[in-house]
Amino acid sequence: MSRPDVVIVGAGVIGCAIAWELVKSGLRVTVVERGQPGCEASGAAAGMLAAETLEGREGPYALLTRMSRDLYGPLADELREASGVDIERQTTGHLHLLPEESEFNGQIPPGAELLSPDDVRRLEPAVGPKIRGAILFRGNHWVNNPRLVTAFVQAASRRGVEFVLGSGVEEILREGDRVGGVRGRNVTIESGAVVVTAGAWCGMLHGLTPQLIVEPVKGQMLAVQTIPSVIRHCVYRDEVYLVPRPSGELLIGATVERAGYEKHVTPEGLQWLLTEALAAVPALAQRPVLRSWAGLRPAVADGLPVIGPWPGLKGCFVATGHFRNGILLAPITAQLMTEWVTGKRPTLPVEPFLPDRLV
Image (tube, rainbow, N blue to C red; front, side):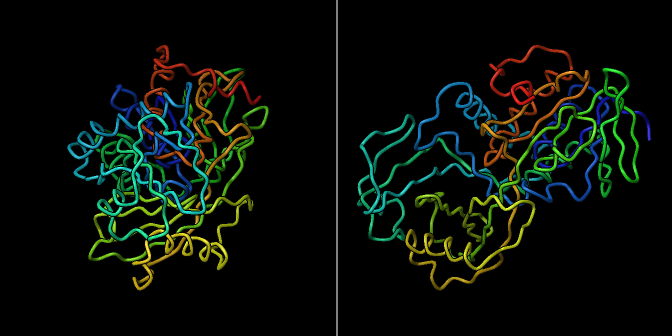
């Protein structure tokens, strides 16, 4: 193995997106992953690009989410050409139902439309009867997240990125105040730059001083078969969302549980998801359940992503803590990380996301 310019630790969607951008900039890149690409949070997600929310995000984080969402149009075309994989970008919009029992103050967030019950049923006839209306975000989209990871891997591999799979990194090597590479149980790779994108496992790496604290937050999900299709939009009811895919699968998610690193699917979690889903779309009651699963989202104390150079260790960079928005933020994270690694000045306000705030 030739010495790479950059080693990326972790082949989730963030790591794979960064690999693609770095190799396009002319760097030699190696990605090290203890499992398979997208095998953790990136594969367990629903692929939503929810830049606009009921809360009406403002400030640098809102800018980050909107810019990243808007990158997906050209990215979908680019990845299809470079990899042959269609990431199934869907642009119908997100429909947030207003149940009869919900409180609504009449404030419409930017980028949204308030719909009457009749408007809702014209768009989605299968929606349940007990609603006061809905809020539609036409600008919010979604993609097939496993296909997205596959597209990044295929495109990056064709450009020369090396993927070392089944090899867990345990330590970031140091040469004084500079990074020297990575070491694991069966792998040692020297490099002058390391990008840590190990999700909820970032805090387990030795060599990052002081320790990076990343909490795993479990999300349970399930999929039902909807052939013929039942809904066209991504539909929300309170905290539960329903995401239709062209394959006929309808994804239902997701719980938010602080349960450490266990990923069991529980009857209680599935019952809650199904109760809310059936209240939103009663027609799902007789559709076959295809599968259920859980993933661990990476979160830090202030809820914002951690993106940027690691303080006190030149050549080391971190991208984690994306929590529920890893798929959404992958393109802009890759763009920012490439700017840092190649010595350019970031094109966005990045101070709220720098690792310095945590250490």
